[in-house]
Image (tube, rainbow, N blue to C red; front, top):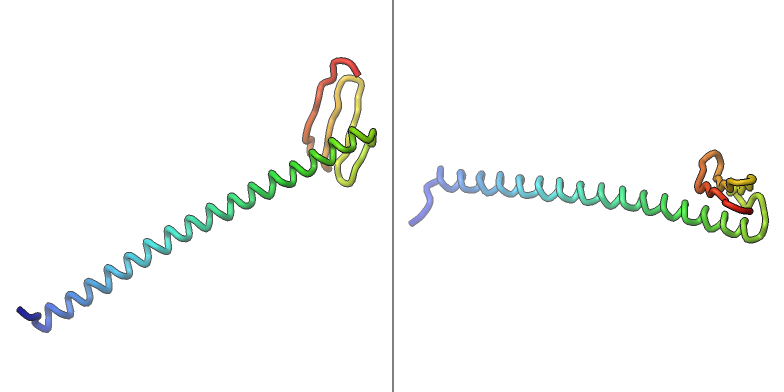
Length: 97
């Protein structure tokens, strides 16, 4: 059983359309995955930066310094504040200094 000319070209057109749809689905899924990976890396970089700032603050507290690199330690009577620039990283309420 063979194909007539019209049937063969219709089948080829259908296969081409099906291939294009599959390629489109694959590209959409790939773009979504790459977007999610990029966002995850940005969050991870922000977490790492914050962790490093907290470690610097901890070292500054241990050494009795008021500033270490970009991190500033403010020791009030009842509140200790750890800042990086204008951002407050940690604020601790001290019961007894």
